[in-house]
Amino acid sequence: MVSSARRALALGAGRLAVVSVATPPEVKPLSTWRAYLALTKPRIIELLLVTTIPTMFMAAGGFPDLATVCWTLAGGTLAAGGANVLNCYIDRDIDALMHRTMHRPSATGQISGRHTIIFGIVLSILSVGLLQLTVNTLSAELAALAIAFYVFGYTLLLKRRTSQNIVWGGVAGCMPVLIGWSAVRNSLSWEPVILFLIVFFWTPPHYWPLSLRYKEDYARAGVPMLPVQEEPLTVTRHIIIYSWVMVITSWTLIPVAHTGWLYSAASIVLGLAFVWEAYALRIRVRKDLEDLQPMKLFHFSISYLALLFLAVGLDPFLH
Image (cartoon, rainbow, N blue to C red; front, side, top):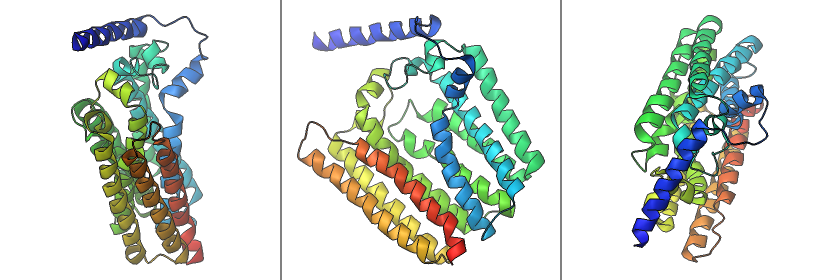
């Protein structure tokens, strides 16, 4: 009886969500330009650019060409924005079921599905074209690959089918370091590959605490995030494993890139602090506390990545 009631409630929620997409609720709307801006997920774009600029400094061994930096950032912003908008279009049904995302313009119907997809395609085409014309072909191809993987690989293929969705979906979020390096060098080498892997292994311990906090949202929407499929103790074990792999990977950059004291010290201190936070979350799970505070690790992970890549960018000047 209980399971039947739950299924009925879930179906009811799904019907309400469909209605909310078709019929926008009567709330005070954002202005049109702010609604379109919200579709691009600006906060995610900011985090991606945090990894791009320092990578360009490392690739140049100092100050890169200013015009190249500006064009790369412009193209990268458009690429990330376009991919995010297309993600909003595809996920508008499940976004409407989740408290964290139900106010997105694509989920409420403030921006129609047709306008959303056109906006996303235009931004994506502009990004690749801009990088091709102002930077180089390699950077443009990497941007196109990032968009395609995020939209088709992650959003369409992986997100609703596997609990490891965010692991492989994180590949798209790693591409800015390759784009930044190739913009300066017009080639790739082991240094950007290691930076790519740092972000790749960082993504699960960054995102799983968030999905642990909002696991009921994901369960309601039918998204098989790891915290939905597994117990918190299992989730924290995975978080710790990925945290250690990420930290060790960050240390391999020291001999490969011949970094100076700043990056070396920062990667060691920040890495150990990250692992400490990961273990702290596991301890809270073991104590079976009502409030696990997973967002502590989530917020620290953002600071970790920003500070680590700040060290990447500053290190060439102190080498």
